[in-house]
Image (cartoon, rainbow, N blue to C red; front, side, top):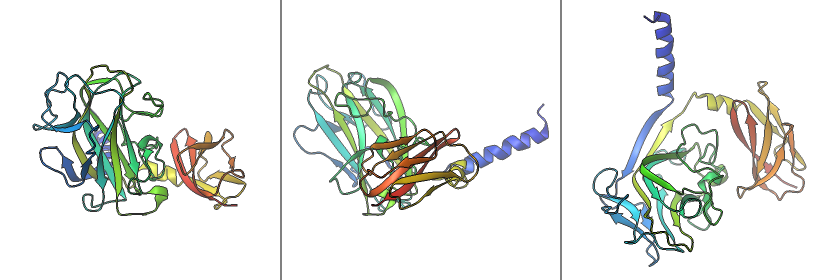
Amino acid sequence: MKHPIILFVLLFFSTQLHAQREEYSWDTITFEEPYDFLQIDTTASNIWEIGAPDKVLFSSAFAGSNAIFTRGDAGYPANNHSSFTLVLSPENIDHYPYSVYLEFQHKLDTEEGKDGGYIDVSYDGGASWINIIDDYFGCYSPGMSNNPYTFGLYSDQEFLYNDTAGFSGELKDWTTVRFGWEYCLTKEGKVNGDSAMVRFNFISDENDTGQEGWMIDHIRLFSMKLSGSSRDELAGAFSIYPNPAQNEVFVESNTGIPVERLQLISPTGELVGTSKDGRSIQTKNLAPGIYLVKVHTNEGTVVKKVLISH
């Protein structure tokens, strides 16, 4: 029999973990009826289709009758780029832009490392897009390694034929993907518009493999309460200065947690500077703008914003 004190401690920590994961559900897109915030490309080359799957691997929806999938009787066509877009706004997410999460189920049947799907986001009405793996601007975002509630995504080392990071290969069983933005689903942390656009892209190269493509179902929109988490404590453990910076930016540990390395990310998501001493990064040759300093530690990764001006 376990000691009562041990049982109390286990119950206490279990309660704390559940408290940090309190969810607020908004919408679930099941594709059984039209959804006002879902936009499918209507060009002739677009192969996304909503309906009842009737293929070999894509034989049934995750729930209900319908899903969205790439059509084609003999498999998806070669040289194709098709997309559908989900608009996120205060109209379908009450906590927008401060806590926005997406979760969906999917299956995949494509040529490994060649054809497949990727997801990107736009903060300016579709004028520009960034792969969610490279989106470092929503405080804790899909591209951030320190968001513990993001899972099932492709990594920045998994590439499609055009060197875009994305899903490829085979997923024969329904698989869950979850990603989200905590505190600010906005470019550079600013509310520069009343919505964001998340686009699901399918691409194929010149080879016709006869495979079925990508199928998605049960897209869930929700927010998550994460107050009091150790991630928030880690974020406050470091300071950067000067800010604005001109020639160099320094990182200081406020709690004694050692810094393993630093990375500097440009406004376009590119890695433009590194430091192995964990103390500073040179900025004198960089264009003015808002950059991100990624502070890597053995307890996690912290991201800080810095304005570079000359």
